[in-house]
Image 1: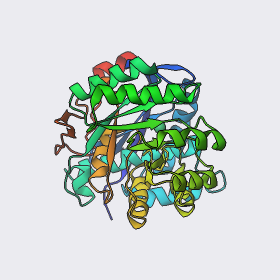
Image 2: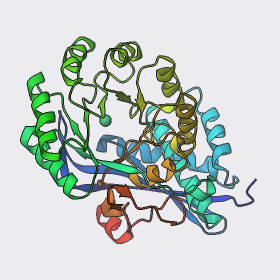
Image 3: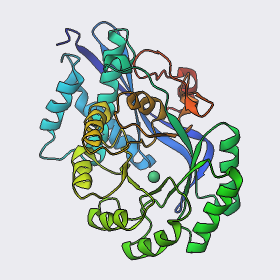
Length: 359
Ligand SMILES: [Mg+2]
């Protein structure tokens, strides 16, 4: 057990403008509401965790919850796995989904980062792995037929090997035209994924996916509500194109239920919603046991490192949303992530920039 203990947990909230506005079916996202967590250990080492609350309405409550949990950590040994178990037990009656799970995950990320830094190691080395480059794809918003094709072409020019576009337009023909416009922009060797963001009902999903099945898609993501596992099983069995799920699983139990239901061919947990680094490691073990390829959702810096200890690592979802507040965002070269040996999870705050956006 580590003889280093936790001195304090500090929390800040910030609204960080996106480098480019991101269109979804329901709104245009122009800024990220973020909770920044700093854990200080008894040797003075500081570890960082980052939470994305989706809506500014959740910023204050999430940060407040982290602050309320902080006293439970002070003077405890810096042992993230053990603390994850103890905190989960403390919140068993309330449950660990939603904001509670987010707060616990952010603390867990910061604890692991701090532990690696205390031992002068990268997170990958601490976890027993070797840094491995992974293939990132770029994400395109709900940008229409021409806009999606243009964005895909730009990603190809930047060296990416894949693109994912949001679809779920009013008509099936618009979905198809968007995919075909991207295909003609990037060619046959480029991976194209599509994401419905849970926008279809099961009957409409069956109807539309029939027509998408011959488009050479790498995956079709979340066509229907994330926890409708029985309908997902029918979709996954009906088509050749892999069905992708996972960014909306809250904790390892949701993933387990989905895998037991054979609801998808691929998985892509979100490191915050799945339970931080501790939750990710359990998810990676589950995916390996089921021999199912595992990608990520957001958190490219941390996820790229965790992919190095994920036996069935697949694609990395790249996003530049939080680049403005990072000293050295993840780099991509010739279609792969550039892995380095920076300490911890590789996240260093750019304090000068953060000062401008802290609220
Ligand atoms: Mg998605």
